[in-house]
Length: 286
Image 1 (cartoon, rainbow, N blue to C red):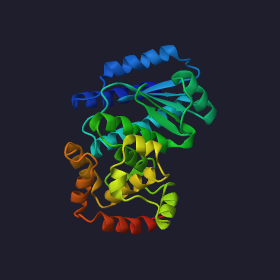
Image 2: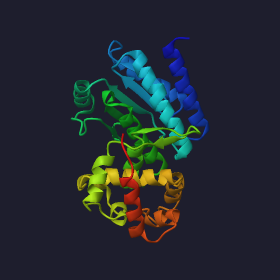
Image 3: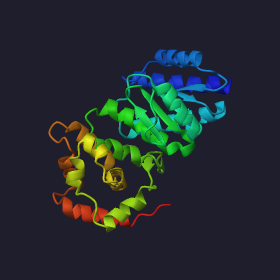
Image 4: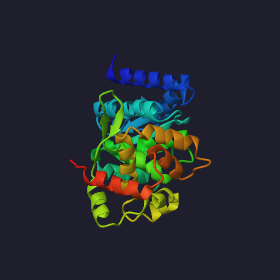
């Protein structure tokens, strides 16, 4: 069996597993979508691979696109499902992997009608697509994979947790039991600087931030503060519990503040933030 046929078969098996679990596009829908893309795209320029619930399109060499599909997409999907998400996206979602900044800029304008708002990559629910410059590394890809799963599994999830989880896994690996874990990353230095300068908002304010404020009024620390709150919970063995209890109790705790207190076992978030700050200041990257 050739590499392309083997990859397609693995993608269909993952799709079948998702279907049996009660969610995800069917193997037939994934195959039909992939065939439509192959018919529309120049095969000399683009390679198409199924990695359920995604169809991966890349302008790099076929072996490279296959490798991203297997080692990043399927790897992340399997472990994220095991750790957090009871439901996955019901629709087929495309992942567009462009090999360099020029291709990323050009194809985003050509195929999606606008310039990319980030040099790394983004998720477009409107186009049901993840789009990225894969030359910046696979971390952005894992980050963006988190978002459609959050959208399917916890549609009311606030931006702080959506981006906290996404950015947590933009630098990730496995623990000794094969579970996905976030590692320290490039966001740490600026966060530590803000902590030392006393510039971080209290957690109650961060958790109460609306989606518009989180993105549009970010003082430059929202992503990092949310990421390293998730990182702290992960390191204490509490992140999976927090996510699931927050999802279940969102109707009565829409910011997650009360869930956080319960999971941490404290009502004194001021004291917790001081302890968390000391924890963060003790981290190192690389």
